[in-house]
Image 1: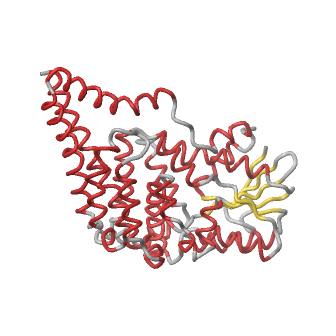
Image 2 (image 1 turned 30 degrees about the horizontal axis):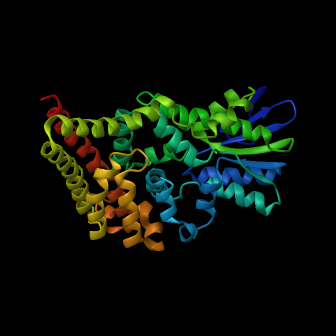
Length: 398
């Protein structure tokens, strides 16, 4: 494989030519919030008229960019049922981060990717979406991140949302030439190496293989600048055998499944032993304590989120029960009830990426309030497990 930049008089250094045995790939590294990148992508596709255009998008992200009425077709109840609410929330956080920067730079995130698709369509050039399903990426990243690091990751993302620092012209000029989201992830790489491996390294391999599989002898591939070096490094390798593994969510292993049921089993067993050794009254007292330890914090969380009264009642009733089963959590039950009782309207979906950056926006926007309900009732139920579990085990050993 040979990798070279175009001559300076033709294209800038963020365009590289990759020559393989049966095809030539023009790899264009872009910043997702750069008008310069948007103009460059359009110019290259029009001048080269390649056999196909490969784009760093999956079906879901392409639909989000190209179909402004996407929210009208989103079944939020199904999102909750399929346990995709956390994925949707992280998607919105990332989108809001880029949109905030894009607003200061004068261009919306992903404009160059959409321009690549539109230009290819106008010229009758086949288009290939070469990125991994964003839901798979986020869930693999979440699985790869330890509990402590999950908190660090969420705190970092949320902090970036509420950062009101205005960028000076020098920083804005620098950002116009870079993929700022990839930069953010790379900065987290030292603290979150496993997360970075999923978000960046795995996708480098995935996109490189998908680009090679695209029909045509001369291709234009449009990817974020943060993926340029990685793709150039791995595209000469045959990693096709990895696609199935990195393109799916790994199932929970036997050890993980055992651990999921271990705490509920210990709680139930401990309550039974308390009843056998210390009598029905002590059993009832600890069972009631378990119910209150879960129900009160979860209901309080729903109340803080200004949830519907039915959601608050559901939080109190569901938390003690769901805490004894890993199949569903109190947060998802409460979120579903909140969706049914206070469904957000299309305008609130469209405004979510803006409202999410304002503290009061989480209560004002009904979609974000569903996220609040999910987070706070989940936290309340988790707190109840520690409080109630301590009381039960302390009673058992005394």
